[in-house]
Image 1 (cartoon, rainbow, N blue to C red):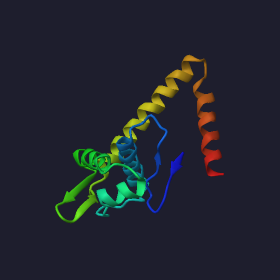
Image 2: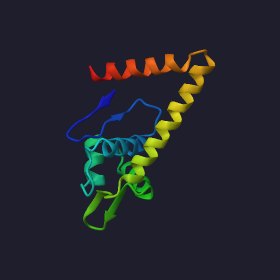
Image 3: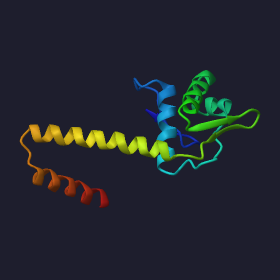
Length: 131
């Protein structure tokens, strides 16, 4: 069951993915989508913990992971903010997507799909997404 309140963060309490990792994933996705903007302040550890009904240590662990990855930075007494340089995040996401697409293409070819068939399927998916 997903729960979303006054924040843009959503947590699936029944997921096997650890809660701190879900928060890290949320920040990454929201940053890539432009919902979280560079220099935007994130909710405090305490506020987000209360809002999501999660132990503050879990939020702190997620924020520490995000800071280690360079996605956010903290200012003592002021809070945590989205990093101004998101180019690395976007490049990493692009490379991961490229690898996944390459893997899918290889798998489809091993099942006998030709390049023109795969191109047609890709075009069909793009048209469905526009609708």
